[in-house]
Length: 386
Image 1 (tube, rainbow, N blue to C red):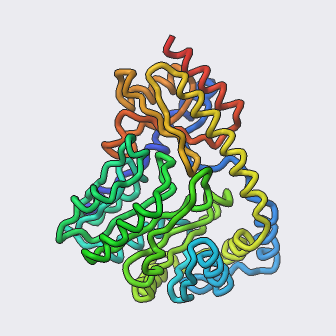
Image 2 (image 1 turned 180 degrees about the horizontal axis):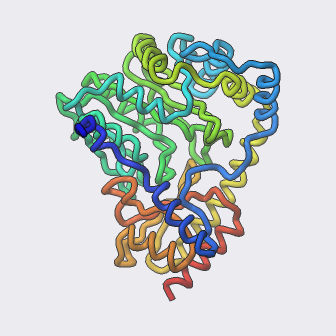
Image 3 (image 1 turned 135 degrees about the vertical axis):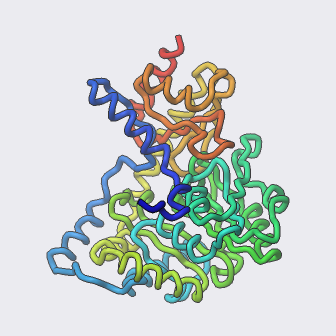
């Protein structure tokens, strides 16, 4: 048998699914496991969103639609961007996708050649580095430091730019740390990109999931018309992970080409799901507000609990629903601690090293679970070290 394409030997998986499989193996043995590994809200999709999809299916709105997205949803996205980012993109700047992940892949597939350099935060979402490697580009991870509250430092970005730098990936609010970039830092990076003729992919999937911080987007400076591309979606904010609905906003010429990728790869995003997306954006926002109030309570509970465990210390995240405690004082590495907590405490979280080399010495907890489960997990972890 002939070998596969070179990129197939470079593409990687995700630690979340690895540890979920480990936890499920323990559960098959009859053990009770408390889950903190998967980045998925534990709230159901709001009823009014589900009802829209149900009505559209009953009305037989189940066929092919435009590859780039239905007009009604694109108009709702225009309103959304104008309200949340302060500028109104054209219809031609918008590409609707089956989830946000294809937006990462399509953007990189459309912009990055073998040998180009791709800059992204480390620790960061594993897909960034995985797709970079698949495309045989050069990954340039930029360290996020705890002393900077895990915010990307524009100086580090500037010092890493070379003539081969093609793309900078930003992620705020950030996975796995929960950090939120300030307006000044984002704008400095956007200005560097303009100066050096570099594209920016702004992954803003957690844009509505904020606590004390304000949201800002690097795409504001050029209104996603020249070199910045905005990525957002419905999975997290509206608890629609399985619906697979996201979108890109970017320069018209780039979006047009990505639309061709969409035609060749996926034909279109599911018709009735797009209608549900309109309801999500334009309908009742109280479910989101209630979810975020619950996440804030959970955040406070888990940070308090983690800071009582000997050898652990945890900053308070400003966005998303992840806690990222340091475990450096334990004398164990991230994977050793994650395995210890799973097998000895019955609690499944992720090693920070699953998010890049600079995640070593940390763990990621997704606090998409009840306060009671959080408190019980903290108790079991503490007892496992006694």
